[in-house]
Length: 220
Image (cartoon, rainbow, N blue to C red; front, side):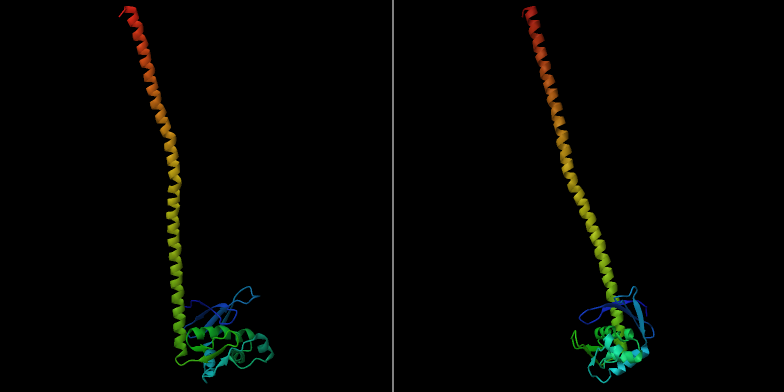
């Protein structure tokens, strides 16, 4: 299976974006960024821990998210997904992966969610949770790839439209210039014609005057 990252978000009141992937052994890797962290943190949840988590959910009872950092650290957090992860590994950041795993399993159809942003609870649904998770992962990658293709197509299409509009704008700008040049050129043509006519009239007048002089000289 290709080790590509799929993007998702948590289900709480403050939805947090994270990336996740599954390797060929069924381990889940989760990449998230903390508020004060400069670089994202990547955690591996082994297939062994995932099996134990699903066994914890097997009684088909609603389980709380239970991943409050302070309560986990003080040992006062109630039973739930986060506290169970904390028992598997005594690290608060690891136990808080309950938020990301809950989102993954909910969108995969592995867990049911009570649709509450606060006081979230989850219930294991019937079916093969591994197959559902892998299928959701593949579908997510396919959708993201399709979305990227559509974005690229829109960008190319927009670029083509901009080129067409740019050419149209240039043509529209050139039209007044052409008209202006025609208007500037046409008076010159008219003035030349008028000058020729004026010159011809003057020549006629000269010929008439000369004819009059000749008539008077010869007496006819």
